[in-house]
Structures are given as structure tokens and as C-alpha cells.
Length: 440
Ligand code: AMP
Image (cartoon, rainbow, N blue to C red; front, side, top):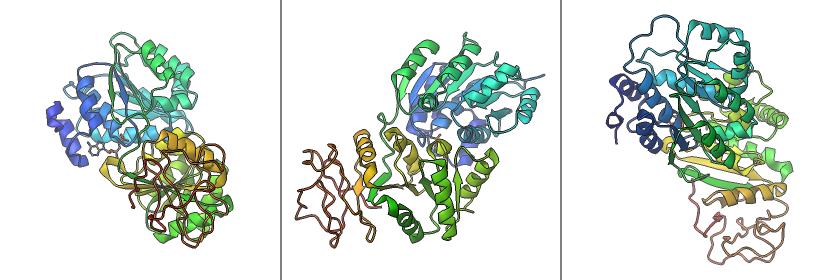
């Protein structure tokens, strides 16, 4: 299928061609016709599937492609609510690119920066407002934004907004918007009951599209786990990054402080590194992201919230220095690699105390994960992945693990489990079904 076949206007098609997009992604193929029909939409699609264009293209087509130039002051006609500043900035970038040949004004409003410039932009008049919930409420309370003309509402990464505790703000915004003839598009990687309840309350007979299976991860990503003692993680990370110091790598840390320390350590060891997290100023975050995108730095250490929705083209490698506390975050994290058809590698450094988190991730994922020791960094005791806290027999569907380095004294499997005789040394095992994971 082509973008032409979707009925998009020449000005939008030209912008897409300039972006180098050849054909719509599956979520775009499914969502665009429904949005063009004016339907409300519940879309299950995660970052990396092309979801931003899936809502932006048809809304541009509906409201702005054939519109006569607006005289006088503009009121926003589209509101895109998104969980983080980075996502808002990224959506803005996309809207600008796709609307390049249309007369459309978009602006972002998010916290962490002054209200003044946002108020000025709103006063000058905008068509499309991209906002985080908290700051939008600030503007609503000060009456510096007028949402009475909103015709299309997009809730982007709705699950994430709920995870971040934005439900009250989302409801307040929804209640402040016009109800009649409003089109609502809700995008979410997952559909917990709260999301369904929100949809029932605020949407009109929504069409549903689901692209990837729930919580499935991009198929082009290879997953790999390196077991390691917690005390040696830093050195292992340095070793891995030093193997190809030009490769752009996103590293995830669990805490702000830990991410800062790690970035400093890597920087001191000659890797051009920056950290982004919630304690950094918006300017520092924007600068770090820009430096990473243009290659000035090669390693970006990020916390989950800060990295939410970061869009970096064809990022080859994501490393989980710490596993996320919530298994779903693993899916969000590795959504930054293997995008739009590119191959990606997701590496996790897993210490003994993280075995439970790894088990949760395994349960959530429907994809093989290779477990592979790195020579010289073998853990002092094996990871317990048998699901009963240690030492038990493996479950029948669990692939056997074995010492994957010939000289290493400890087996990687549960106690008493024998390595399979036919398995070659130093090859990784798959987690599910015994299939060998791909080597990247
Ligand atoms: P998203 O899921 O919206 O974060 O998009 C992921 C990436 O895919 C972004 O870098 C987009 O620019 C890119 N993208 C979106 N649609 C297409 C398309 N039809 N063809 C190629 N790349 C695309």
C-alpha cells in the first residue's frame, strides 16, 4: 500500500517523500483510514511503529489540507497530550516535518521551562497544541489557553501517562474540552482496565486497531543478557562500550544519581557521555539529546522517564545497566532500537539480585533472550532463573543453560542441571522453546 492510496493530499505526500518514507507502516495503514472517516480510535501500538505519523497525518489531512487560510486569531483545533517533554518536542518535530507544505502552526507546552514564551505563542495563535498534562492544567487555571475550539484530541502513550500518575489531570483536561463532534484518538502500548474505562467514559464508539501483540517487542531486536556481579557492572559496561567506541549507545540506569555517576565514570574513561534524567534542566536535556543525535557524544545514560519516547533513528544498541523495576519498562526501553526495520541489539547486565526482575521480563516477553557470559566478567554465583527463588529444578519449557565459557567454574543453570553435551561452548541459550537466539 502507498501513502497515495490512503488519500493524503499532495502537500502531505511531498513532505513524506522528503522524509524518505516509502510506504505506510502497519499502524499507519490501519489507523489513517479510520481517522480520516472521523472515527474515534483506540490504537495499540508502541513507540517505533510509526504511531506519531499514524495520528498526525490524518489529522493534518482532515483539518488543514484543504483549508482556506484562517483570518484573525487562531484557536487550537488539535490537542495532543503526551507524557513527557521529550515526547512533546519530538511530536512537534514530526508535525513540523509533515506539515511543512501546509499553513499550520503548532506549539508545545510542557513544564520545566518558563510560562512566558508559551503564553506568547498561545496569544499569537496556534492550530495544534502539543502538551504534557501538568503544564496544560497550569495554563487552563491561568486561562492562558483556550481549548474550546479543540476538534481532535490525541492521547499519546496513554498507558504511560497513567503510570506517571496523570489520570486526574487527564480527566480534568477531558472535561474542559468540547464534547460535541470531538474526535478522540488514544494510543497506548498496553490496555489496562483503567485505559478501557477512560475510553468508555470519554470516547464515542471507538474503532480498535492493535498492531503488535500486547507487550510484544519489535521483531528486529536481538536480546542478550550478560550475567555479572553487581560490583563489576561498571567495568563490564566500559569493556562493552570500548569494543566499539563510535557506536551510538543508549544506556539505561535506574536512578538519577546512579545515572550521573555512571556517565561521569564513562566520561573519565574516554567515552563521550552525557546523562539525562528528571533532575536535569530542560536545556541540559535538550542539549544532551541533540549532542547524542548529532554524534558529539556517543553514550547517553538515561533513566526510564527521561528516555520515554526518545526517537533516535536506527539506534543500534541499547544497554540496560540496571534492569527496570517494572517489566513493561523493558519493552519501552528497547523500543529505542531496531526501529522502522533496522536491526537492533538490547543488552542487559544482570546481577544476582535482579534475577526476579529478569524472570518478570521473561514472562512478559514472547521472544528469546540469549544468556551469555563475558569472559573475565563471569558472576561469582549463577543467576537463578528457575522461578522459585533458587536451586530448584528447571521448568519443562525452560531451555537448559550451561556453562557458556569453558573455563568458568559455575554453571548458569539451576543447581544440578547438566550442560547438554551437543551444545557448543560459549554459545548463548534461548529462554523459550530452546531455539538458539540470533547473534548480532
Ligand atoms: P514513532 O513510532 O512515531 O516513534 O516512529 C518511529 C520512527 O519511524 C520515527 O523515526 C519516524 O520518523 C519513522 N517513521 C514513521 N513512519 C514511517 C514510514 N512510513 N516509513 C519510514 N519511517 C517511518
